[in-house]
Image (cartoon, rainbow, N blue to C red; front, top):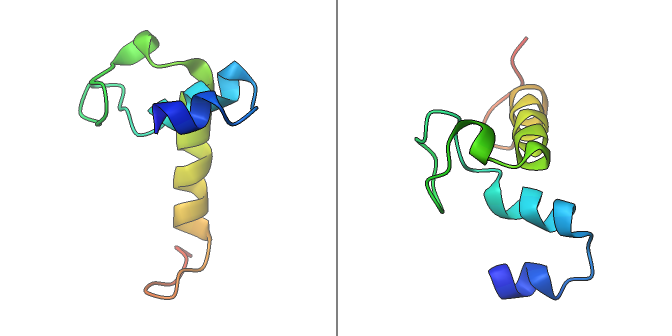
Length: 66
């Protein structure tokens, strides 16, 4: 995954966000076990956007929160 992102041509910050957005502020996420401000800001922003989309977007297996 890291090699794919490194060679993708995206800006370094975007690649870091894609790599670390499953990390959690309390170190409960996965991949590298980052926590708090150790998680890149762009990764935290992607995590918020992903959560919002999961709650409001339509998925074939569940309806959006109303």
